[in-house]
Image (tube, rainbow, N blue to C red; front, side):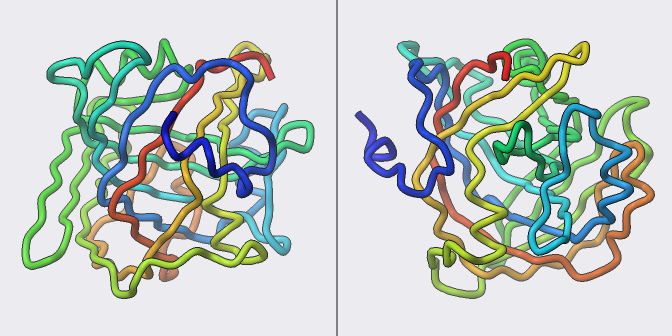
Length: 246
């Protein structure tokens, strides 16, 4: 058993009793967080979900990273699609009192990942032209969505850690943002929950030079001009369960 399963104290609810279905590792992950207008978010979410807030404030998260070693339980790493780039745009919600994540979009540079994510995880993946590389001790990341789903805005930035890794205090905003172990999605007015598990987050403070900001459909009405909260983690292995009716 992976050592992640010996660490569950950080979870707000127990591990699923079912077997996990997929594992993957996340590399050079950057958390970018902006405060968001709760009233605007409320209009963008399915009515079945509630906006989750910390001290009365709602948040939007933008997370670029590289996925490696993706595999289905009991199967070897599939060639070509076991490594890909990903960009998540998300917010924080509750359903029946359970805290989780709602994804506005998950961008990937592999079509098979997009198709598999939509079918298997029931989440709104979209294809994007993406690149990620390291130069001068900084991670450079670029993403530009394909097709009509894009409103013509890209994410273009470079980032790097500026502190040693640390564990956020359980009462902190950081802990509230990071320690999320499920997402909710709504299809035909039915709520589905996908569970995730990993060790508790250890992050570094980060700096980033953001040249262009990602936007998605109606998020154009949100304000991304304020300086975001920035955190970095080098690597995290995660385990996922098939989504089920919540």
